[in-house]
Length: 334
Image (cartoon, rainbow, N blue to C red; front, top):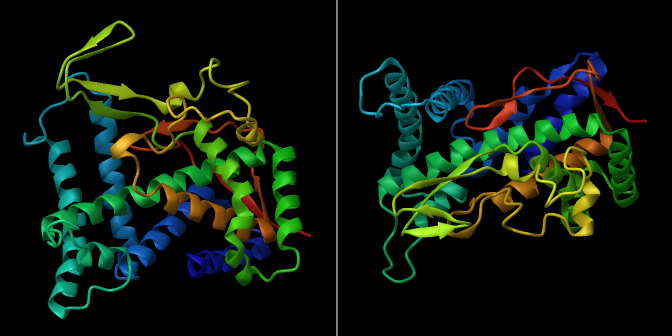
């Protein structure tokens, strides 16, 4: 992670010195993809990131249409959308399987996340995962492990730019803790960076990358007078819950300090990574990644919107990404 963020820091320095704006979402997507690539596949797919991005975008478009369709057609039907979906998913499968098979044939699993999946054993049976299970786990982490982070970080920088007071506090805190450290040494003191977690959580509260999730009832039940039958799907929307005035003070206001006052502690009101046995496996990964990005970039740069009065609208695809490019200036802090 440190290596990836430091390389990205150097790239941002070039933009700062060149006086050219960046599309924050595209840059965060590149950073997050590089991060998941290095940590999961040890750079095995670094030359195919544009191809992978296109496939993931195709999956996003398909899921958006399906989520908002009144009568979604079965995936097995040979419609144009279904064919595009299967083509993109199969392409990602092939990329991952190519890496898996290469490692299995060499007998060297590697010390990255994929290597851990390949070498892990069931504590009761001693058996390893099947190849199909490894592929499914790897593809899931790969697809969800970078776009959600990129979306969350883009909204974080957008919301910070709209809140000069919060941005000033972030920079002051970073300077206070790390003023005597070199950039490359900052990640050795990650425990000192926990104050940045509130920035991520507040950004996710206001613009949750996963704005709706689903659960299927395992048995007949009743909630608040509503009867739910076994097998029925229940939609849970963080986007709606995070704006509920019963749970949040001034929910439309960007206020990272609210978490210091106890807001967000109710796991049934605030579930940024889901809850229960199917909560997000990558939550700690994301928090650590965001903390590192905010600290290292915040030490050197300030990101400012090219059009500060413009309100960026979210686009509800699989993730709640910005509808339009988020153009920002990269300015060196003095």
